[in-house]
Image (cartoon, rainbow over all chains, first blue to last red; front, top):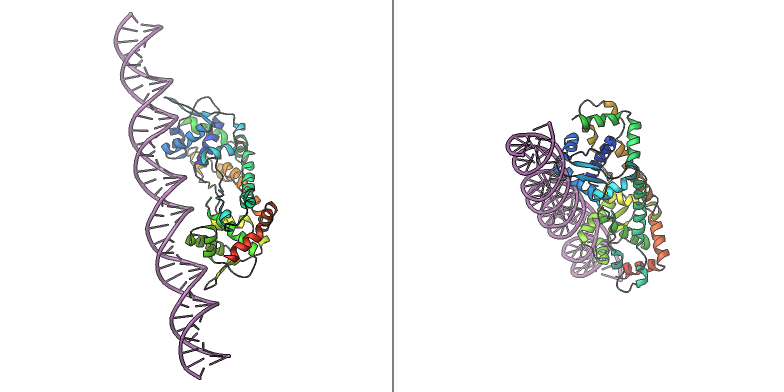
Length: 158
Length: 158
DNA sequence: GTGCGAATACTCGGATACCGCGTGTCCGAGTAAGTGAGG
DNA sequence: CCTCACTTACTCGGACACGCGGTATCCGAGTATTCGCAC
């Protein structure tokens, strides 16, 4: 999985912590997390296209959460960055596996390999969709009390 | 995910259907499924290293299941081909996110983003580990009765 | 006919190129703030 | 002092290179078969 997912998660979390109407620019995040600004911008554009962020152009512009934090799931983030395609792609090689005389009936239903892999991926997606930004934020504050105000101070102070 | 997983699954399934002591060579599988022989061989070597297949060199050599089909899980196959690394890699960018004055205490426990992502991946791995080759084979025969003997005939006849 | 030895054909196994996609970068369009002059 | 137009600085957004991991291939090491020959 691409590292853009991690970047997106931390950016979204920071925005959730700030929870203000003031947008935050790519440059701020890039400097804070020590990331290449232009490439980070590219990733954030993916989040905009997915409807997770809204962008304000012009001076003093930047990005802002487009939805409340409890309605943004990890599934949304992963789908926005990695794309909606399944990780496992069935190319139907089974149909070439048994010569020409194989009856069509064998291939009407979906491939059993595909089915089993999709079951596993579905479990993954369910687990992702079950966790929201608010959950992750709450867990972070539970494990390290006071981290919220620290992030807030770091992003507003500098 | 690489397509080698699909190849490995079909090869293992075919070997499970044949369930004989006679090994099957890479060339046979490559011709049957219309795949590049050398590259398929490379993938099968990964399965050998993982202990899922055993190889018999020399003429009339080939590959054979190293374990009974009900003790080979999809997790084993994916781990053998894709590697044991997690899909999501945490690079700890959070530590650079809040300046220098951040207390060490914040980073003693694992990152909350990492935790949530690992939860989802764990669900995926659990679902993979819960399904064995025997299950997939049974499902295939349930959806398309008679496919077993067809595969057997295709691999032994040609 | 039978036993033995060399030639042979076929297999796995690792070392070697190729290529598409994720990674990284640059520049232009657009907007809001700041500035100065004019009324 | 207030208004307004202009300059300016800063932002997003998409178009343009680079490098690495998956993809694909080739050749050598090794073994069971097979053929031929001597006995």
